[in-house]
Length: 129
Image (cartoon, rainbow, N blue to C red; front, top):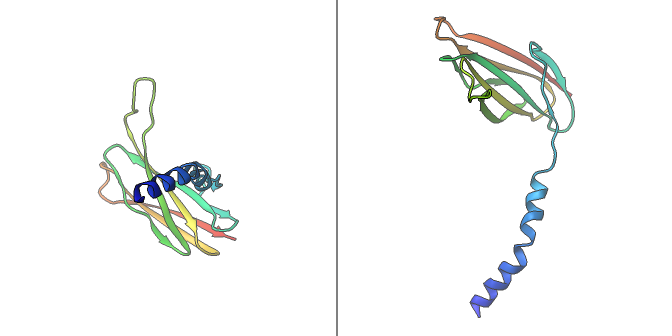
């Protein structure tokens, strides 16, 4: 009896799995500033924006320091590839943030280079409307 119950439950819930998965993968919009742009504006309900930090091979990028109403949602190490495999010489990370309110958000990245004794700070200012 119990076995029949779980078999029936399995048969009824399996067709729902793709529908639930499709709902989670709804299309989202993300704002990405052009290279060199450090001040920009995002709008919408809980908008997403992506920032990229890069250094030369052997360098490092610390976790971003966020001031204001935003949170780090995700981060990626980026590997650029050519015909023969990964390209050598660059270390790049992408960070996805989500605004949690309106106002000004400041995001700082500290990057170290193997050829410089002091870290370099890269600052972005995002206005959330």
